[in-house]
Image (cartoon, each protein chain N blue to C red):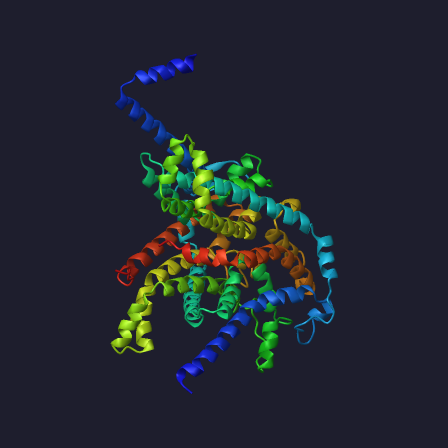
Length: 312
Length: 277
């Protein structure tokens, strides 16, 4: 009865008002569809981000409920701790080596395997596959391959008359163990993305430049590289961010050792929070680290603005 | 011989060498899992086991609750993927076809979440979930991953490229938004949906950091965490048990390798298209 009378009321309304009302309801319904996503990201990303900022101003031991407000003390303690600079250095060294090698090898592989045939398709798949193997399992396989005494790596070196190398228990080589796993998992992905970029370069550019007398090397320098630059920038930024956050391989292969020579940022954060239960200090470190990553990402964008050529 | 005659076979040989190098660790993983402890310590490693020690697999299943880890991983993966997919489908419709105040600004806010790594939020989320009593439950593994900015982004792109004509015709016929999303838009955007599905299955299956922190009992562990703990359970002695560790690892990655083999075409196309252009 009531519904009918509401409907009748509605019909009596002037057309324009009915239209705006209809539009408002429609836009509210549209909005409600994005609400679940907003809710999840709000509760599990944005709120925790703000809460981390708050915790970072407190002296809070995770196992005790009391939070004592200490202002900037956590940041002060961190910035005067020589360990921060050690960990930052390790993280940067790892990131630079990892990013440069992954991109360089990925590009070389893309150029090498840029052939359209069944055999090459299959080879590309095999090279790409490790990207989807769990980092934890990959790290365990490399622990075995790099074992000083029984590992296939040292056994192979001995075939060439080389002395066995200390890998994961050496302060200078352990980081290379981490990089090896990362390369194994990463170069296939960079190769695929570079290949997509290579195929997007119009053939006319090569034809035009070869008419002008450019050789292959000049074509690579003046056609291929500039036109790949948007792809390169994408890969640079994404692999920079993921290398900075390296954790799994460290946790499985080195535990940050030997003698903290592979203690990277996320591993330190994890230890501080879940071994030492220092939520306040570790949150301060998280916030500091977060801003370092954002700042350096922006720097990469700005520096590359002049170098990146978008077509047209 | 011309330069081309030399380059073609050289290129093939170089490519084959790279392929062999990349496949080797996986090959080594499987071969090691089938060796006897004595063969592990051979003076020079054998590339084909003298005897296939299938019993290694039996021993692993007896030493750790591998089946339970597998079940936990499946529940985690199915839970995350189905929740994320539905949340993303609705949001993608809202952002691509919907019309409301602040739509594009909100979309930017969603995409911005991509730069917040899970290591930044895990302490507050851990505290929140432990207050709810969710630590060591499937909720803790699934619910925090309810929305993926990446999936929303990809699906929105796909929906945007679809013409609105069919949609409008359907809505004239009285179809509501859910019907339009699930019956009309989703089938048309199937390639993108399959892409997102595969990528998310793989990343949920392989996740490590989150389940490591959110669970601490043996029967709630997922495969990645369980096998890493299995390795830790032989302090200093792990090299003597590597055949077992590798057998467990083979079980953990087998579903992903199978998925890769069956869905390879989708995966490669997906990867090439999923960069933010």
